[in-house]
Length: 63
Image (cartoon, rainbow, N blue to C red; front, side, top):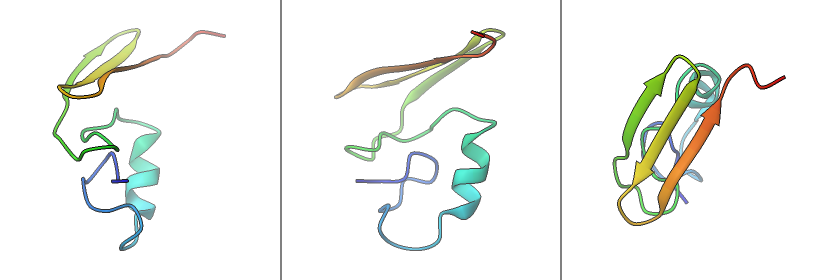
């Protein structure tokens, strides 16, 4: 498994800054294969697509 923010192995190093950034920004790397994802940010949320593992979605304001 890899960090979805920096792309480095999740078990190595300190990813505190990555966890903090995750609240404000979409992931940039696939956590399964470390590929850089295609990310699109909209006013309602974001989508991130890995060529091998498909799409992730998050929408804000769904309360």
